[in-house]
Picture 1 (cartoon, rainbow, N blue to C red):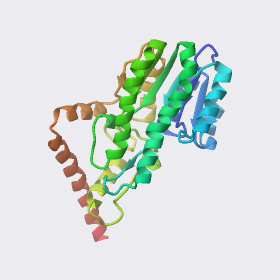
Picture 2: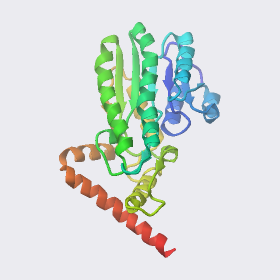
Picture 3: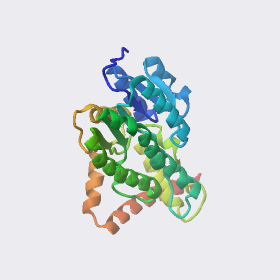
Picture 4: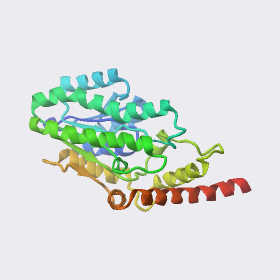
Length: 290
């Protein structure tokens, strides 16, 4: 693909698969100078062959962020579009989630994202233009059993996104957030579901959570979007002259967010707990018969 040097340079984190990979392909096809990044360069070799520049970025290793941003700024003066896509998700009851896993989620989803953004802002401000697109989650607006820590990181991102949007617009930098529901991708494989293997007080709950989340990540499941469909929304948000503050791709994402706003807290809790435990009991019964 030919590159249009008049277009802004695009930097995307977490491009090894799923939404990040699909989004990088759209920017490459549109002729943008596209910098795709991942923790392992070999995982994005296909994007390099398509025309992307590839960079190693582990958002928890700030030295890789510094090197990557400096590389782009030497060529283009500033990063024109930053898409903060890298994230991990770990599902677990609050009582049993190891503190190390809590820290890992925050290091990637919150601290790493902020470090990435801080690295590109000085040159963006100097250029008086730029675009930052944060990939959040519909789970940044509500909490479900076992999602307390992961969704807390997305709540944090929602807050940071709103602050950045207000603070940076006077400098010509537009900030927007994508809040999708379930995406058919390897995202679930990069995270963990804890507490379903060994018998314990949360086993039935977590067996249900594992089943429901696994099904939700399969293409064709009702309400689940493909990475390519979500990437089209993100591309629009990144290239539109003046983007909306938030995009919520898919009916399910919108329905869950607004249902949570209208439903009493304990009714919401009961709905989710009954659903997950019911599914978990079915699985446990099958396991006991085997």
